[in-house]
Image 1 (tube, rainbow, N blue to C red):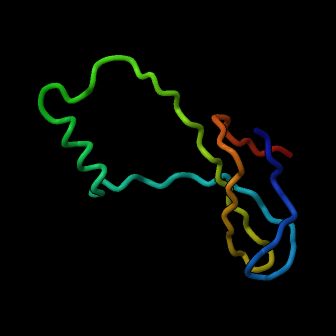
Image 2: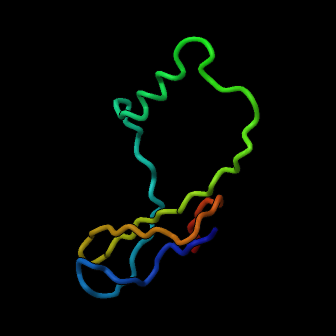
Image 3: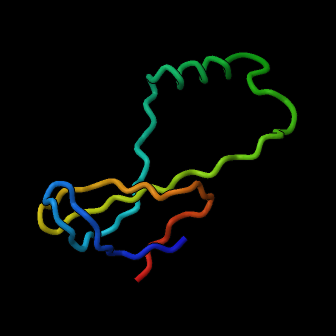
Length: 93
């Protein structure tokens, strides 16, 4: 999915429209001490940690997130693209 490098949109901090720079939001590092990570590690301990057999469930696509930076106030705003897609966002232009 192609997306322009600059879009004209509303800034909630300046309260006006301006041409904002677009950057693809990257995921942060997973927390090792989170309760979900610890319970997952516990299931993988010992013998027979993983389940056998094929998955019958189809993976759901992710919603792509973009970070918009205002040139006037230098603040960043999140923009989540509608719909779930397996295609990665590529900046064009």
